[in-house]
Structures are given as structure tokens and as C-alpha cells.
Image (cartoon, rainbow, N blue to C red; front, side):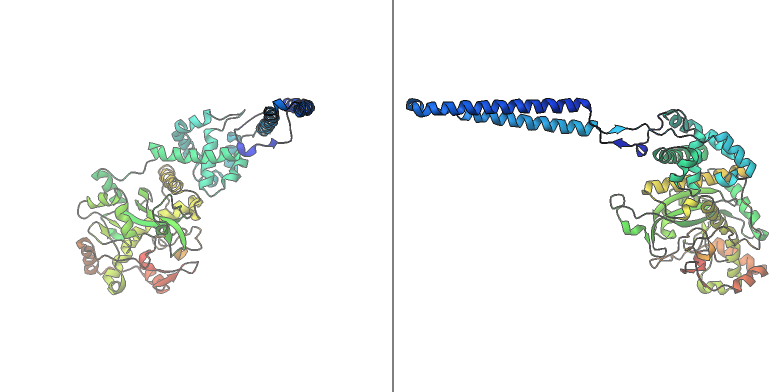
Length: 493
């Protein structure tokens, strides 16, 4: 049965010469013999005429050779032209396509029953079966058009396309998924592209910044509940950036290739900026700048994010690390000698208690979609499409399957997910670490000063368990891969 329009599965037989060509060759050969015979006869005639010319001196000025030679030359050129036509015909018609392989599609219903029986569905598809069913319903109107165009005896179903896409984002190779789902190589790659397009175009999966005061208040309430004794009660989002490794971009696609190179991670990549709620959902996620760009430069480039926080009422703010610039709307920890003050040191702890939510969100994002743990292959547009799709699915899964509440107050700064070999502090993603070009812009925040005054007046300090842990750490720590990182630029708990 002929199936799937898959050029990669085609085989050609180049040893077949069609009979029509053979008969043409025979005819040409026959023509050639006839031409030779004619040529011989012409030669004999020419010889006879030549003798006559010798005897008849009155006709010595007549040119009798040119017509004969011209006729022979035209005959040879015609033979060459005929052979060239035959060669062209042979090359264009002798590649006979074999029948395409009839790929046996995965029986989706039986596949689900087996995974449910084994308790493996959530792990293989990164969400519960009910959430997966809702995702299918969301993407079906978009992907149905692809299914309808599938050639062959068995269509590639919407469930097949989504399965291939989710497995690839989870870290699987596209070339391997074709054997699981039952498609050709080209069909599998097309399925991934269709899946990414569908996820990124579905309005139900959009990532939104809050648009009303009620929405901002709801986010603030969630963070206040996470803060010990409600000490930090105006947080409306935790901000941070992370570095995603990529291929070296081409000179045709970017103006400055070197700007994408991170000296710290010794890799090309992009800077992603994000802001999350207390339940780890993104209210902003974007690929905003080349990989060598520091967070305090990337933040203003995040379309709409800075404007949203700048327009918040006084007393409402975002929390970030020391790589950002202090303001009334963005609070950052104290650094350097300022941390020696007990009240300011305690402020750092309570700030980080909430700001760590963005690190947890990044960790969950990369741990769930393992394609982000390595170098993403492809153009920058493809890198952006993959990152955006992962962030949108991350939110969707939390909304449907619930937030990930996995840490206690004592272990809030630990990350139990698989760590990256080059990430600091056992993280499984790569935080943006300031390089030698980093310039800290001094800022002023009366809001931060007011919180510190409250801590000082009430004699509030770090919890005992955190003080003991801090004693075991040095100011400058090494990542698993041996890269030195200043803790205050990651999470100064």
C-alpha cells in the first residue's frame, strides 16, 4: 500500500533503460549505417567528378567540394544531437520510484490503556490524561487541517501529532519518535513544527500580564501568604532571566554574532526574561536579547513587562536579584558590605523567600521539558518557538493539574530536580550571570527602606535553620562544572 509522501524513504533503480529508448538507439544506429553508406557513395562520386575535372580544364573554376563536405558535417552534428537527446531521456526516465512504505500508525487508544495500566502516562506526556484530553480539544481545530491532508491508508491523527511534539519537548529525538508513532522521518519533523505552531497560536494558551487591579491584588495576596509573617506584603511578581544555549547564529540572521556568546557558559545562547506568580505560573515570558546581555539591560527590552510594573501603585512591586536596578517598583537584595547589617541581611532572606519562586518555575520548566537542558538546534526563530511553547504548556499544566507545592519553609531554597553540569548551586537551568561588562546602577527605594525599618524595630532576623546553613557556604561558590558565581546574583538567601 502506498503511504506517506516521504522523500527520505524513496529508493531508485538507475539500471533500467526503457524499451522506447532502446528502439530509438537502434533506429539511430541504423541511421548512422545508412549515413555511412551514403557517405561512401558520395566519396566514389566525388572521385569520378574529380577525374572529369582534370580532363575538362574549362570547368576548373567551379567549387565542387564545399557542398559535399557541408552535407557530411550536418549529418554528424545531427547524430551528436540525437545522442544527447537520448542521454537526457535516459537520465530523466530511468529513476523508477519504488512503492513507499506503508507505516503502521500507533493505536492511540491501546497505547493510552497500556500507559494508564503501567502508571506511566503522566511521566511520558508530562501531564495527566484528563489534561492531555483538554489539550487535544484546544489544538484539534488547528491540527485537524494537517490530519486531513495526510496521504496513505492511515491518517496521522491529532493525537499522534501532539504525542510527537510532547515527546520531543520532553527531550526525545524526532528521529526516534517516528518508530513509536509510526511515521516517516519527514512526517515526524513536520508534526513537530505543526505542534509548535498550534501551541503558540492557540489563544487559550496565551500568557498574559494582569490587566486589572483585581488581578494584581490576587497575585499579591498569593505572595503574601508565602512570606513568613507577611513581612513582604506588596510583591506582585518574581522576576529573573535565564540563559538558553543555542547554535551559533548565522551572520545572515543577526547583526552581531558575538553578542550571542556567553563567556561565562562558553556557549552561544539567548537571554530569556520572565515574571512568575507564587504558584509558579508565568505572567510574562520572552526571548528578549542575545546571550551576553545582562539582566539589567534585558529587562527594559522585555516588551510590556517594565511598563506594567512602572504603572503599579506605590507599595506594589516586583522582586529581583542584584543584577537588576533598584527602584520603587523593583526591589533587589543588599549586596557587599551592606549585608553585614543584621536587618538588611534579614531583608535579603525574606525577599529571597519569595523571589525563589521564579527559580523554582525555571527549574520545573526545564525539568519537565528536557529539550531546554541542552543546546537547542535550529534557527533563532525555531529556538524562540520552542521556548515559548514550553512556557505556555508549563502554565497550562499548572492550571489544569494544580501548582507544584513541593518544598517546606526550611528547604525552600533547595532544588531536587536533576542538575545541569554547568549550572551553579545544583540548579538544572542556567541563570543569567553578570559578566565583566556588568555595571550596577545605584537606585533608591523608600519601600525597601521601610521594610528594613520594620524588621529592625521588631528585631526580626533570619530563621535559625537558615543561619546554620549559611555558615556552611562561602560567599563565592562553584557550580558543578567548576564555574565561580557570586551568590548574590543568584539567590542570596
